Length: 331
View 1 (cartoon, rainbow, N blue to C red):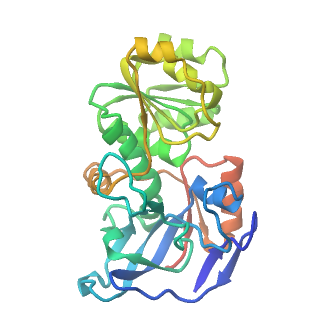
View 2: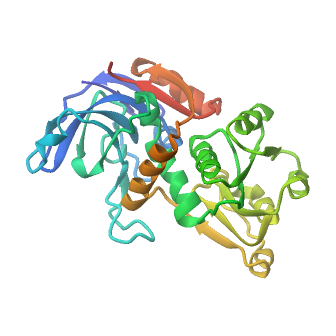
View 3: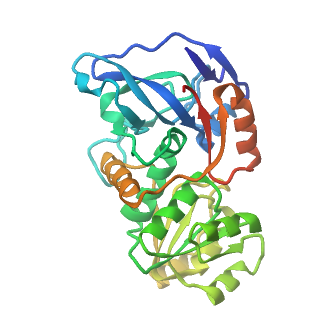
């Protein structure tokens, strides 16, 4: 089969590799589409823990079951599925256990024509989604759902601020919050991305490059009951400034590094800081049900064939996307 492979640091190629075979409890999925995440870019650059080369990246994928291993119900054959990318979550709903990994490292990922995956990782493809949309859903949708609902416990009518709109998780958080009848605001360095967020249901947005953006946000909208962030870094204290007393700040990344916390503001205003990572099987089931019930369609930035994976990585590295970048594989 054909697959994207990282043979060494900052190198990629589309190569022929042996077809996978299913172990007991596993199936083979012929992938129709797969989507990129920043995690794939970090693996390519050697900036992810436990990186080994060569590897087949990719955490997001959707396709058809074409073979089943021992102990797997043959009724799975022919089914259209989407893959849950959190492996070995563990027994505790509160947090992942020590065996937790994410599909695409160390296990071979979805940027390939076929993948062997435990049958327990499969869910039916939501019928209203195209193959590209289904492939765009798993990692970003799951991360957003756990952050917004399982961790921050967003309620209808609450005011939520989502930072750095344009990335996959932030856009899912926007779509989920709008569907939950919350009042949604965003930040971005791009007026065009803010305008597109408004078209998706946000009330407005703020340019985080402006030193006075927090003051403007409080005047126009705030304070916010919930703040969702993935950047951290120097700007994190501004997020505390716009959070309501008793509010919740949930974060699932630190692309700008660790933050110096304004501890006095946090304890005096009784603000909760909530870390969030991916999502449990219960989160996955709730998220796919939510997407189906509300007929949410992932925002797709671009669809390219597998052979043009290099272009897809380059665009993600430049931050050009608004939504998910998807690679078509079969059909």
